[in-house]
Amino acid sequence: MIDWWSVVTNSFWIFGLAVLLAAFSYFYWLGGQENTPLRQQLGKPSFLRVFAIALVLVGIGLAGTSQTIWETALSVILIISSVVFFFTIRSRQV
Image 1: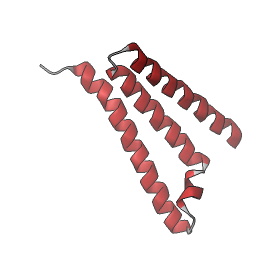
Image 2: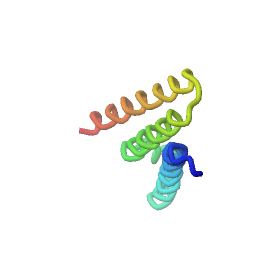
Image 3: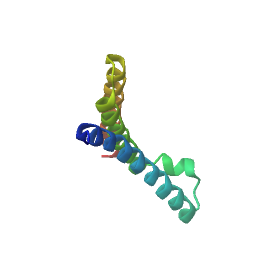
Image 4: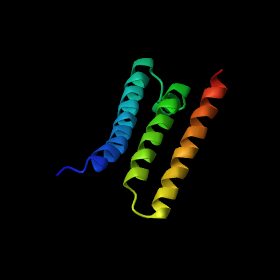
């Protein structure tokens, strides 16, 4: 029988890594179109917001698949720090 909880929790971190890879690919392409280095593209608030959201998804997936309390604690720390980072980037843009 399929363990649906495992499918759901693993889909979060897989989707988060897919979003992160897509963001890196897009901003690499955008840097080539604008003739700017990748480092400058990765410093843009639009990339940093996607980066923070992807880390939250990875953290949720890791928290769902964790077996011990310290794994869960590290996942929660990743989620909280990513959310704080997201709101920091968002408030600096306005």
